[in-house]
Amino acid sequence: MQAERAWQGLLQPFANDEDAKLVLRALAADQAVDVSSGWITAPSGTHLMRPHNDEFRMQNCAIAFDVLVLDFPAPAHPWAFSLAPIISNLKYPSHPHLRSDRTLTLHSRVLHGMCVYSAAEFQYDPALPRLPQFLHQVSIYLAKHVIWLKTLRLVNLDTGALVHDGLNLRTLYQNIPVNSIWQKHPQVKTYWNGLWPGRTAKAGKDHLSLDPEGECWCGTGLTYKQCCLIPDCQRYGLDVGWL
Image 1 (cartoon, rainbow, N blue to C red):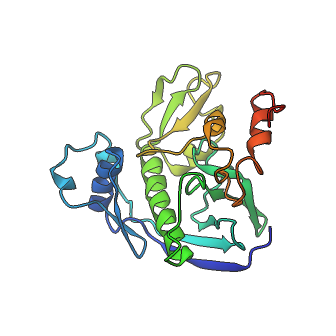
Image 2: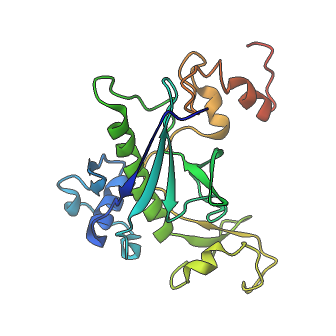
Image 3: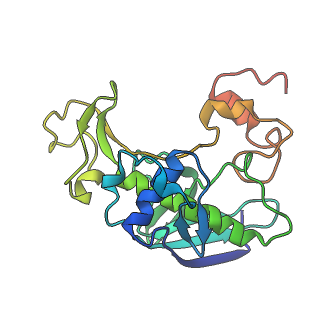
């Protein structure tokens, strides 16, 4: 698809670490958060809730992201990329919410689109401009991304057992291939796993429970039946003869 408009700007979800701690607390309880000009704040009363076990990890959270949004003719949904700091499958192989089907090559670097929401579950308010609504969702995504970064732990791929708590490691170590020689036991398959707080949309095989006549999860604006239903059925070995 050919984008018809582009927007680039800085989004910083957290003003400080205290905001990050309260937002983590709210999101983990599946509460709605407030968004204003990209800033994320927890609703009033969150400070009275029980602290989250990972709040001590919320340090140096005031990260600003240089975001590029590509807007496409309706009914397609926009795409969003983080130009700096880079968010990509190459940098974060275990990232749970990146779109490998949405890539952007910039200065020989491959960036992957943020999986901001499922188009099958998110609805725009037609009475309001679409870009501010989209940036609202991008800001929440970036807040969750920061929380995910700060809570990364190295775990055993097969058993889920903790290999390293992820504290006091330089960022470089988090990006080295998971079976690198620096590990004490390089034969153990591991991956970096962090907390992505709050409810998440249907993914993978669960897409097959979506309404075939409803909007497709991928964001093309087509119905699921017109778009990804057949490829999803084929991917998971299901008969498509009934379609």
